[in-house]
Image 1 (spheres, one colour):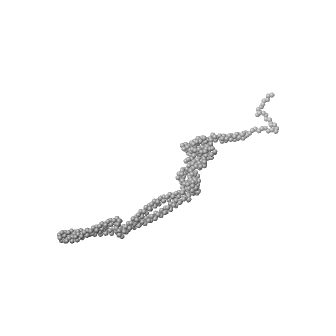
Image 2 (tube, helix red, strand yellow):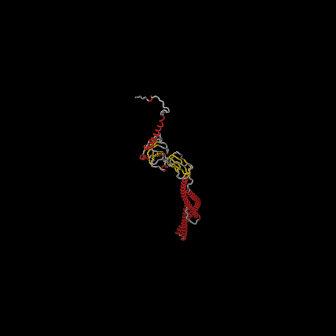
Image 3 (cartoon, helix red, strand yellow):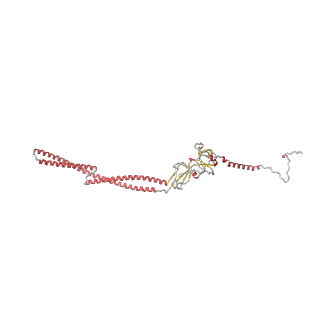
Length: 422
């Protein structure tokens, strides 16, 4: 028997049997939990892929920071910081005064010794100067006395010489007269008017007068020589009080002049020694002053990063006063995973982004390090980023000839950047 089947939507509605409920239609919201589960599974899958696969495919450094060499300005002496002329962010120039360290325990033994020597030397100089002045006054007095005695003696000799010259003239006239008398007696004897005895007597008188005239001539010559010598200050005659006095005065003058010469030579030598000693004292005073208030100066260009020892701090020799940064040598310190060690080498090009939305800068690796010890990190302004075991430190510098470096931001050591292989 053939029966036509009717569509279900055309079946007549039949009531459910008593005691049983009709099944409920599924709600559209029932699919939401299933979709959420699918989303969680997709996220976990993406997380696993990004965690496990992306590091093996990525060329980025795990960590990278800007860094620059540190400039440590230290004090060579112990003391207290009395002045400080550096502030954070302030640029520094070579030779610029940074701080003043006051030290009141500077040894002054050498300076005390030099000052004592100068006092002793000054005392000797004063004594010599007093002696020189006394000798000069004595020499002036002796010169005055000598001039007076010499003038009197020369006048006396001139009078004696003039007297002898007058006697010479008289003797010459007498000799001439007696010679005439002798020649007249000779003429009268030839005529027989006088005897030979008269002629002999006349001759004897003439000879005596000539002898007397010769003696006067010698005396006059001696007196003239004595007068000339006296005018030159030379006295050879002894036994005369005036001559003895002049000789003593002349000797006294010579002794005083010799003493003055020797004293002046000693004073010149001591003055030269005093000049050298004063130079040593000035140098030692400058040294003591410099160490008592020692001015610490910058030895290179940079930017002040941190004031380690403010005013009033007690510091020891070698202590750091100011930490600065050499911004002219700013570079990048990047940490690359061990798997990328084979792709890293000196000169490898890097791409650096300082700001996520900023321009890309170019750099190149200058040094590769398996580890960064504390001594190395102390030479830089910021600590190096953390590195896992096996990671490689790559230290890079900017490409100076790369136009992308234009507009480089200011020196900011420790700032995180994004670094990847080029």
